[in-house]
Image (cartoon, rainbow, N blue to C red; front, side, top):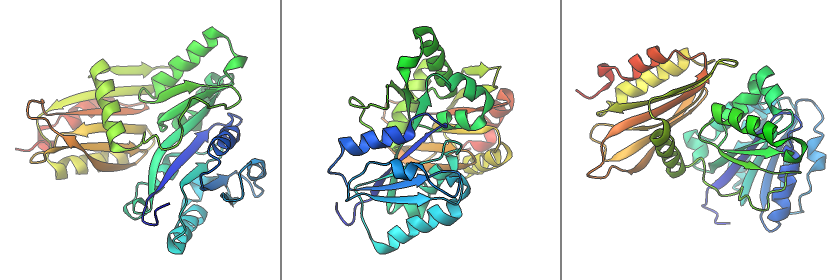
Length: 328
């Protein structure tokens, strides 16, 4: 690997028993010549899953055992990443397998910081779903649907254990939580036809494509799941934002709605900028990247999608459409 190359990162999430370690082993077996850094975590002082990894001698496995990875980012995970940076050790790919009860939002946020991005690039977030137990668990555990909402790829595992009718229910439930995700099916975590690594699903180009595709299908509509209050709200705002004003609004909005927002994706039209601005948020943190150039004949408008629970559509619409945010 080029010593100056940024190391791509794949995060594997999913509820307890979904098949995350099985998927990890499949990835390792299919990429035997790849030099992996694997970060394993379980909630407890003894990491059981670490002993189940079937890697080769060139792979390095780190086990974090001080508790849930999303609760120890400022300690073990942060220290580990910093030690890798300082040692100048390079790996072809980094894979993090989070505990089944982890909300991946804080893990994702770790890799969107400016310093970390100099060394690591978040490639994708993959969520494993247990087809048989998913619908029941997503109604009881916030972590289960947070994992779905914040993933770019969702793999429905153990599909051989449920009926066709049940599968439709699972797919509809996933779509109601995360309409952007690439959804695939498997049994026993087999992924022969799934290109997990280097998919670039978290990168600006893919994000921009997913927003455009989704907005064209369901622009300015809301999708409410009354049983779980999961909502997808989409807005189209003509004109151009003032960058400073819209950034301040987003910061205040996310701070106020920390416990309600799961995901925000958007393409922003900013005054005096020739490129689209891509915004992504996971929980209360958001980051901005540069997208493609606006075409000369393209209508400049912002498209923003909010995914969360208990959202007040009129309040958000009034805020994001405020003339105070626009360039006067």
